[in-house]
Image 1 (cartoon, helix red, strand yellow):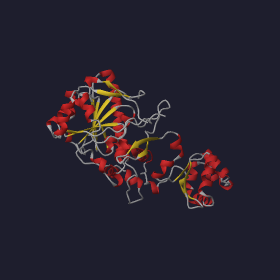
Image 2 (image 1 turned 135 degrees about the vertical axis):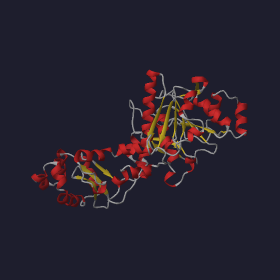
Image 3 (image 1 turned 135 degrees about the horizontal axis):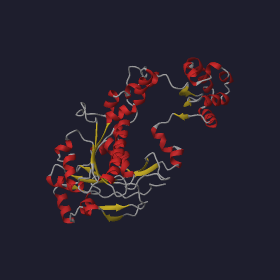
Image 4 (image 1 turned 90 degrees about the vertical axis):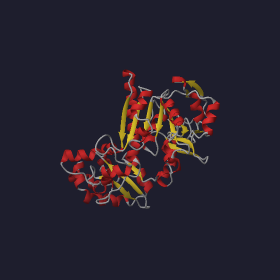
Length: 423
């Protein structure tokens, strides 16, 4: 259902859209120079929460739109609720348009190679001259230090940051199955921007903030680093780890299914033995405590596996549910579209793909006051909001037509606004 939108005058004459319901970041304007995953994730968080996020794209559109293979879902996942300004930043008039827009912004984000924004004349120092109170967020591979000029990818920092070592078997480092550093790096960028905006409320000053893939990855493996600091023993890769709990594994069922089951306390151990008819294990004094059971896994787990192997997957899930034990079926990503919990709890927003298909996409994984945040603006086409944004900066219709004819900007039809967002 299309949402009713009324133009409202913002700072310096810029036109903003008034949302049907006030969202937490309503009135905050963010300009983003980003691509791929890390930068777009940062903008997605801010946009879903109500900020006006304006994506600066080349005339042909962000190259992320055209990725295939494992990158085919990037654009659709991280770019809802954003406006698109398609502009040639190699032209003086294009850069002038961008600078005028930046002078109206609360925050700017960028995740290009080190030095790219400097070459465009859009470094923090230059943008600060346009708007002294700007929050300028740089999302990079590394924070300042010896590595800061290196080119980084999620894969690169997973390998050099210990995560790939911990994920794969001995001698076979394996990257995690999602862009964990890109996504979390973008989230930390959003957190830094929100903190800086809050600080600006009391100081009146903007600032330069940074988030980085490598440091994010190190934060992810901090628990393994600290395990070594506490015990003096290096953490083993996950496939060969000494688990903190005895029953904490994937088990096969009688109908060729698989289920993860965890027993993570002495109380759960008693419940487990009772529900699965394993009185002999419950009576074994050498298995009374969790640490005893961890060191007895080799003799205990075959008994548990044999017991589970006589049950179907559905029977095992039902037994774990009744016992209140942690369990999980092994699910593929595409199967999550039909997950009953996600669908019943309003866990999906709707977006329109470039080919016109309407699809579901996961919402941000939190709620505020019982509200979930989803799609207010559909995925933009390249330049969907060019005309409106330029008009808000004071350009006449004739001036906009001239800029389009000269190839300085481009405009596309505005995607209809979808209001499925708050449930």
